[in-house]
Image (cartoon, rainbow, N blue to C red):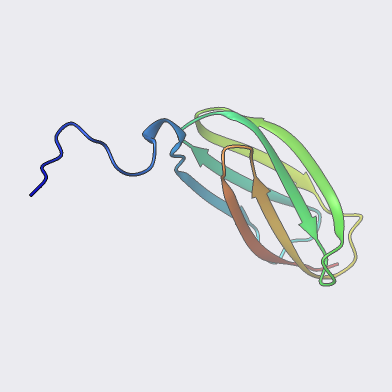
Length: 102
């Protein structure tokens, strides 16, 4: 029988990232408001994709630890359904669909 002591197994807590994300209003007309709450700051990418998967808008931002409010203008987009993806180099990934109305 073997006994292991002092061994950590699992994800390195320094790389663990918690996120809360919301987009409003949905449906939207001119601007969407993204609220992103993270435990660790750093650069992030927000991509808006149309129904065919084509990236129609990209926003690069720097998130601070805590709550971040980002306004994204969408008045140039045609009416339809879009996918919003938020990601960073630390493995954070989030996506949500929105509807754009004119």
